[in-house]
Image 1 (cartoon, helix red, strand yellow):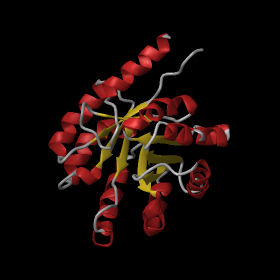
Image 2: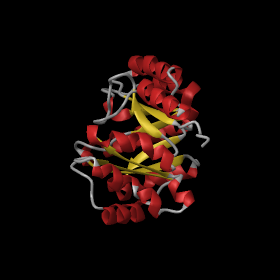
Image 3: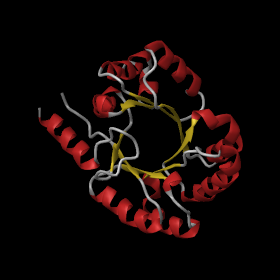
Length: 230
């Protein structure tokens, strides 16, 4: 069996532009295909300097701004920041499904600029049934270019449940779905989702995890290189 080169996105947890400049270079030097810049970890975003740092890598970046906390108070500021960064033309912008209807103007702007949209759905408490996961997919598939469904593994069997989504989909849908489990018990699905059709999976930079159970980019690359030799 000839294996493709599996794509890995490294999630970056940065508090400021100084950390971003250091980490984004390290991530690509270590073999990342994409980096996810988690804007919600920044204490304050200096937009102009951010643009200068990211511009050389922008076509390999995912901008993710989790709209948590005091949503109603902060949403306009967060929408403004994302709109300002759209001119960098990132590879993707990640928007959570639960806020989709509240940011329709932002979604329209992203689509008008022909930037690919990741619609993400998370369950931090567990992994729903296979039927429920299918319902979730049907709900989000109309909204984005990439569909991201991430749950929390409470047992090894949850890896099977999340990966079974790929069997439910046609080939085009499979290639646009990123589905895996968080947590130590979800490691299998993080590794195997790309075998099922996911365009890429996620890793951390060293031990700087943005979600439980993330392997580092170094560990993920080593695992895939070993699998290729088998």
